Amino acid sequence: MSLPAYAIGYLREIQFGDQIARYMRCIDATLEPFGGQFLIHGGALSPQEGEWDGDIVVIAFPDRESALAWYASPAYQAILPLRTDNSTGIVTIVDGVAPGHRGADKLRELLGQPA
Image 1 (spheres, helix red, strand yellow):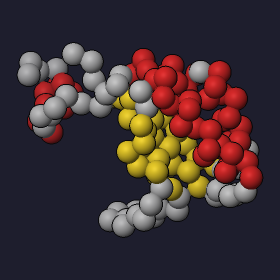
Image 2 (cartoon, helix red, strand yellow):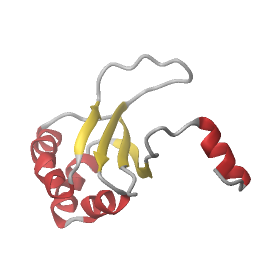
Image 3 (tube, rainbow, N blue to C red):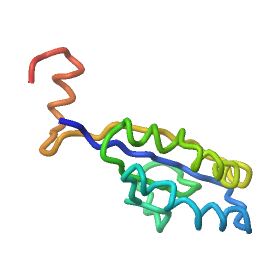
């Protein structure tokens, strides 16, 4: 069973101008061939712990391979500097979990115990 994967960005100090606008107009076409879709794209935050000084972006992909292939694709790499030259932040690809996953499932994994 293939698990979903997510590209997660925490972006700060965004200098909104022509380059960021172009990036936002172009990103959707880079996602389509890899099955990527936005789950979160900025929006109001209600911090419950810690200090948040940026925007969150979460893009879902069918699997890790699709997410990594999207990020490395020539189409995305061509527009990436439009964002990185106009903001600071961190971005990662992370695996999702199977439907019905529970906290104790991760504990068993960490302790090396069978599910």
